[in-house]
Amino acid sequence: MRTFKIIDASLQTIFLLAALVGVFTPFLILYAMFFIGLLQLTTALVTTILWRKEANRTAVNIRTYWIMVIVYFAGLAVLYAAHSAGFIDEIITGIWFFSAWIIAIYYYLLTLRMAFAKEKTDSQILMRQS
Picture 1: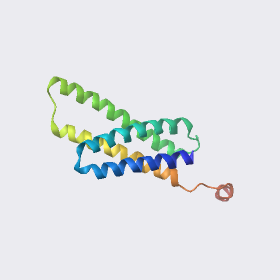
Picture 2: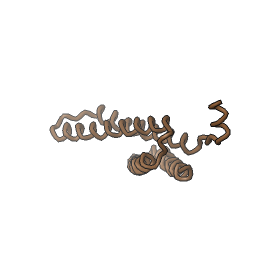
Picture 3: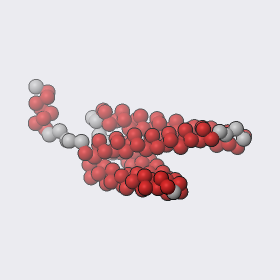
Picture 4: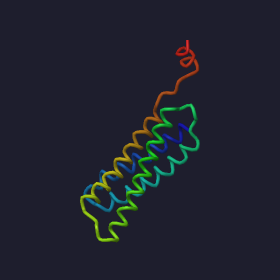
């Protein structure tokens, strides 16, 4: 699982750097945003399925991520309906754009913590219990 998270963190870093470089070209930012979202949804699903049950802090963070994603897509559906009815505002669209980046950065930081956190050895666990 740790190797998977290191690869995941590396790929996310590449896409985030591409988005930073693409500040001057809006299409590169949108492409990077699409691929980061796709990668994060896929790896979050794998992490949710494979993660050990005893990792309570990670489980809470993954649940928080999924709640943010569900709210994001539900809001996207509302925005689509509002756009179809002609009630769309550029400010709301901008907020929606930045909320996607907030979710992406949250999951990126979570991935970094899972990939590079020090694993506890059996002796450290036993020392804490006594």
